[in-house]
Image 1: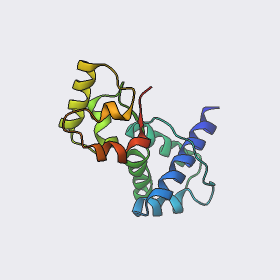
Image 2: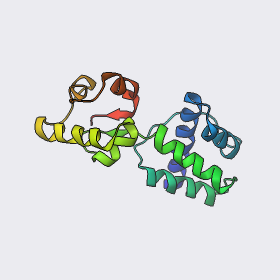
Image 3: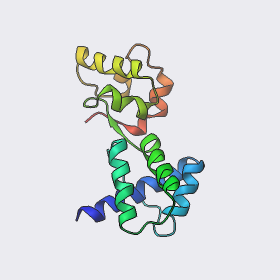
Image 4: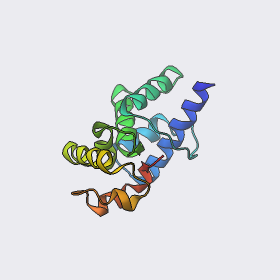
Length: 145
């Protein structure tokens, strides 16, 4: 039952996102999703495009809101909830999740190619140019397997 799983993942991700920040995207979540969903927690690896598809699916299932609100929800999920596997992701996938430049995310990929996969956050912090505080701040969104 893929639809049920997508719904649960979206609800959980939106709930976590709302708990962490109170931005216009949060207001969109409350208005669009909050009436039907309780704040449960599930994490998932999704790209920006996959979040957009999930939001579109929720619209097809009856979620109500404006196009702008749906766009805010999808954008917030992509920038604040998405997790990344730093051992498999491309530089383009790493950059928005870690909040770093394309140049720095390319350096992460290059370091991984030269030294092998990362096993820990401490190993990731060894990438030249990656501030330790950036890695620490985003550690909940980083996967190694």
